[in-house]
Length: 388
Ligand SMILES: NC(=O)c1ccc[n+]([C@@H]2O[C@H](COP(=O)([O-])OP(=O)(O)OC[C@H]3O[C@@H](n4cnc5c(N)ncnc54)[C@H](O)[C@@H]3O)[C@@H](O)[C@H]2O)c1
Ligand SMILES: [Fe+2]
Image (cartoon, rainbow, N blue to C red):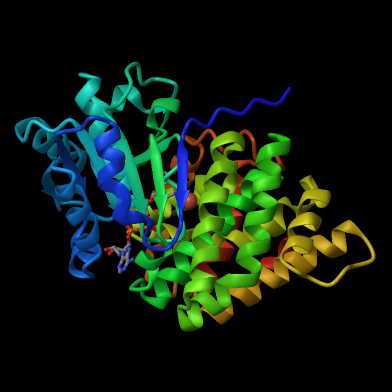
């Protein structure tokens, strides 16, 4: 059985963000909390957006306290700000950190219980205030997903999954990505690629999600290199479209071992989400390949890799392509290069197994397997070792 539930309207187009005021007007909002971070604000991305809101006679309260990988304190602060400013709608402008802060704050406004009670799947009881999202990176897909990720006191990145977290409207305006530094185009683009590959290859089969994932992989294979290299609007548009498609795919089909293992790397060692995924992706693809050779052969094909004599060979060529892509994008080869302390591995293994994405990974995983993958990705040993 396949089931699809994605109640979000998606508006796509250059300068589409300047119509956000009329969206809030249709939602009958009087005062909107805009959630963003300093990097986005300093890049001037809020100007056209706040003008559009003001032109619709709607007040604005700006919450600019978003931190990377937002923690409980950051989202509680946003909730308190919303209440003290008497807002009645929320706008997130930024990357996944801003969007996730907005989602979690909205959830706390209408659900008066500790955030930790809502961790996991299906534990949010009440609808959020009206939420509109405007992504400014090309990675997380959070603008359409049913997830927010909040870091707890133990540095555990706690996913909260509920269809109430799906925003009302997502406005995709590629012109907002023109200021995104090449390193962030690359790393957030690799996050999107990881979403699409995991949603396509894991144990959850869904024709709609698989179509979205395949198209996302194809677009990323074509556009991530030029978008990083020269930031042209056509390739950035394709990347933004692809990251949203990948978000649609994983809202329906969920993820896999890369995300289960990358969250501890980010939570415990502060490695940006996209970078942590990019480093792990070829290792996990290589490890997983015998679990779903057909799926990984489809990944290779969508990435534009030359046809091979069989699925195993195609899966291997897909891993080689991702290794090459990482290298060309300037993604570090190992967590050692990123200065991550190897002594964190035992805690990372523990945290990996708290993720629901382990159970749907296309290959069964033991603690020893996860340790091997971490060890190889720390030292930078060839990911192809798992395929020998
Ligand atoms: N909810 C979901 O579905 C979901 C999915 C994947 C990841 N995430 C979460 O998203 C977070 C990562 O988000 P991210 O990778 O988008 O990064 P981010 O939101 O942390 O932003 C990274 C940096 O980019 C800057 N930036 C963003 N857009 C810019 C622009 N257009 N111009 C200049 N600078 C810009 C920001 O100021 C920030 O300094 C993590 O916490 C991760 O767990 C959530
Ligand atoms: Fe991700």
